[in-house]
Length: 291
Image 1 (cartoon, one colour):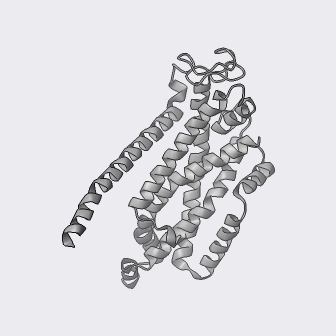
Image 2 (cartoon, rainbow, N blue to C red):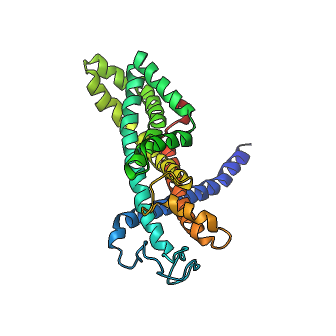
Image 3 (cartoon, one colour):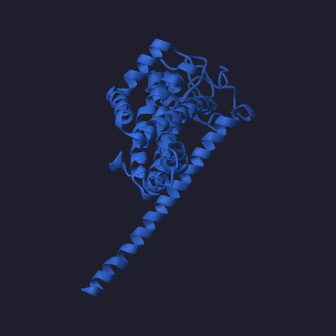
């Protein structure tokens, strides 16, 4: 019996090693892709080899992918690769601040609710539950309709969407660590609540928030793309991945590359963000059951 058990364990070890290697390779590829997308978004004004994304007739209208135009051209002959790179700049400049502000506001609300409890927890939890019960896209559509279409107002709309889920996660993590012995000991030794929050609880909550930030980035990019698809996001001549897809949806039969090339870039970015976020959640032991 012992030998059989040993053989079973030994036989399973190569599978575990192969699985770990695959995850490692996927993680490295995801990080490399995100680094390339971020570098392109930041450095695009200085990338001299790119065509002007707004210049018509840079190539033949609706030309397919080629060596001269890697992603082909759109209805006006504009280079789709240049437009995709420039689109990443605005899409990420919306997602970055939205997630950053959402983490700051959401973590403050969630940690306060988890640590102090009582009426603060009741108020924050009630607001979060009401916000999460609303359809996210309709809520964002209502905000943009009320505020108007501009970069700042779209960023405000998607920022509001990020706060409730982040607040819930921060609250769950604060509850988890507030019950730990080191927090109890700090209180017994006379540490006041600001010290307990910022020196004991917050450093333990930050890793979870960092991992959630990658997932939130993907959600915000999808939200902006959805708003663009229905025509209520940042207007022309600004370029985002969402409005590129919206412009190409009517040409899927004649020129599918207009939407599919940028859609593939957007898909790979979302996949990389989700994979990195999931890996961080696993490695940092962020337990969804507690959330």
